[in-house]
Image (cartoon, rainbow, N blue to C red; front, side):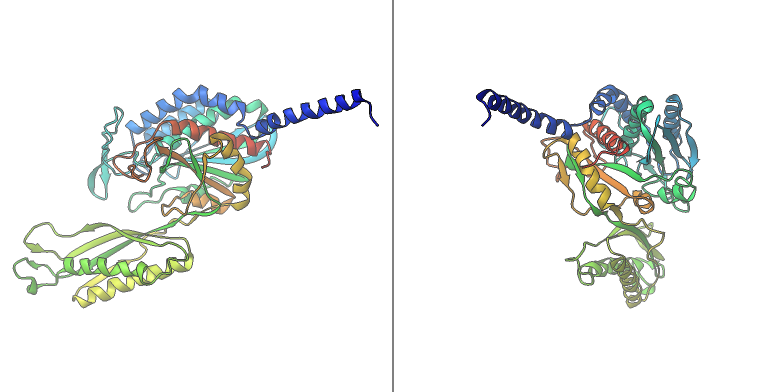
Length: 443
């Protein structure tokens, strides 16, 4: 039998190991210290960039000022940016001092044709032309935050270059919201122009600030995450007549109204939405110029959101059929382009990559801060990158703590408000993901 002294010694060692175990576990689960340091050091810069970009928003394929700001910053870091990709896109590669994996980090730069109503001291007063109309321009979706965050991540990673394993491709993309009519743009064109040709990453990461989450939280989902998005354009053609003599022509306004009403049954009566959600929405109606003239035609435009290719094609066919048959019942005709452009595919997070990187996101927001996101009917052309290589796209809470996010102004609202603490969370999350992946951290 061991002596009392020996047993006491063994017990002391056991107690010491037990005391160290929680600390070791905590260290394993903790955010990297260099991530916290970078967040603190870059906070003021990222905030200033965001406010500057917010004050000077630019529509898709028009982001010349923003792209110049990004390119100048990357050059100042000692990188060699490529510019003019997909019209105004900017990329740069950081080569670490040690061999390792290749990853890509993406941010979008474009704003929306929305007139800002936030009342912020740095609110946008910019205007532009969109679809032939003068419109206000606003970063109503948070792309100003995405650009600023990635500028900060680039600076942080450059400072770690000597000890950094692998390589990082920074992608600053134009026209995520879609290019102007008659133009091409966005992620699909970035890829077509070779953004992954010379640099093929093992993984690509992106983020989006989101009003449905409170600041301090991150949302993520494995597999299908954001819907496919398609546009449609339906022109209902009648025959112009005086408003006092509707029988003297064919009224396209009444026919268009009937098309809109009947189109609601395409989802509610034709699709099995117990399996996967589907959305069909009309976004604009244009027709006529005077109160007492029934016009020749009415234009209807809108969007279709789906998660399944079969359901997507069925909605296209059903909507076109409704438009043609309902218009014919009124004596009108239609030109139904359903869809009218190549749409955006479903954004799907690679399951293996998501499982591997969830702990990295958890380290940034702590226990209870990482939220399992439901399917989101919004769309993202990050989906194109994620079809090429494994991708992970996550959401950063934008609504102030204590405010009900269900009642907060949504992304794309003229009152969309970003709690600027989201900048720090987004920067630390992207940096933690990057370093954990490059250093080969496992869950």
